[in-house]
Every structure is written in C-alpha cells, then in structure tokens.
Length: 173
Image (cartoon, rainbow, N blue to C red; front, side, top):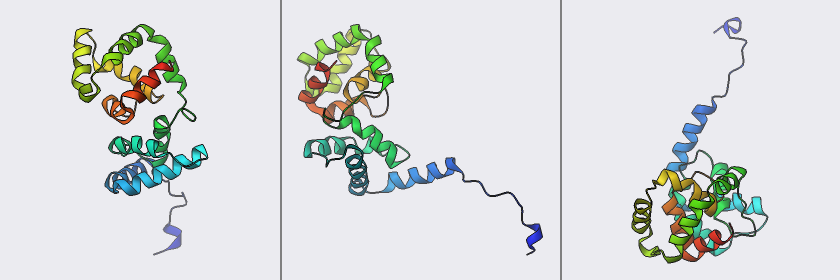
C-alpha cells in the first residue's frame, strides 16, 4: 500500500443503490415496526397524535405504503388517509378533479348506491357499463380520496375509508 497510489477523487454516494437497499429493508420489516415509524413521522408532521380511526386506515394500506422507498414517502402518502383537519389535496390532484367533473358526477352517482361489501366487483361492472377502464378513473378517485393522483391502489383506498369515509370525501369536491 502506498499513499501516492490512492486516488484524489472523493467517493460518491450512490443514491440509487441506497434506495434499493432501503426498499429491501422496508419490505422486510414487520408491519408493526413499519407502521410505528410511519405513525411517528405523521404525528411529527401534523403536530398531534394519530386518532385510532386514522391508524386503522393506515393499517389497511400498510402493504401499499411499504412499496415506497423511504419512510418519508410513506408519511407523505399517509397524510391522505388522515382526517379532514389535516388532509389537503396536491395541485395535481386538484387539477385532475377540475378536469374531470363529468366523470366525477358519474362516479358519485354510482357511489350513492354502491355495494361497498363487494365494491371491487360492482365498480368493475360500473366501469364496463360506462366504457371506462381503471386507468381512466383510478387517478380521479385517488385525487378525491387521498389527495394524490397516484400511489395506493384504488380498491385499497376505498377499503381503508369505508362507505362513510368515501362518501364524505366525495362531498368535499
């Protein structure tokens, strides 16, 4: 070993590799620990403890949240599952809602009479009857329910909020 042969360039931190390693550990951490870190991050972000109902909603989407590369990403998505006192929609979500008023009214009509026990099946029938695909309505539904165009699956969002929660979020648009 000779010091003169050591390169003078500093090493670089490989963020891509870091994200892959972080995602590996997030996917393999048990749900309780993952949710604990997510709850702590959310509580710090909103300056209050999470309510039991909010925690239950987040538990419903734990698998989906774990697909993100960092706890911070999970926290950002998790805000959409909190109560209305801290819930806000992103600019993209607001734009998506503004651009799809006619579609939203169709979905709202469906939701008023929907069978929430078999929501996925009945929603698929609704989409088929209206010549829609999930790609046509998914981002609109997520924009209304969690304030983001993408992230958690639509059916998981609906399951997390339940009938009353979904109807309440639809009333706000």
